[in-house]
Image (tube, rainbow, N blue to C red):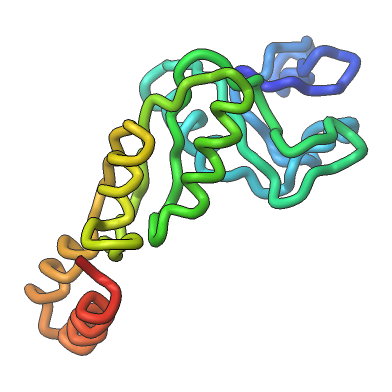
Length: 180
């Protein structure tokens, strides 16, 4: 994992089995390195990077933006690797696309190029017009937006389970009000 630990040991933590130092292979909670100013809860990019490392032996740089800039520790708005080259945005859910638009601006301001957007759930809501928010993002910014699951998939699943019939009705009402 590419992360910039301010620890003077260069991001090396003691190995539990040999007592020697080893390069950190994945981000740890803040308590693992008392000199780090890392966020206690990592965001989706971090979780994705950890999964790629552990399950596919891929080491990828990651970063996330804070809700507010810090003036101590690493400081700034971004935590993690510098934004450079092609950058994939990873998020849990997309509604109106506001957070993705902010991420696109941050990536471009850093001189990097957005490669695409991956979301776990697309609520399939209308954007500002007839298109969905994800379709608008692709049209406006030229980046593909891929969802693992859409609201229609969740509704289909709920339709096949009688115990979820009430939830499906609520989702259908939500979609009629906000969806495409």
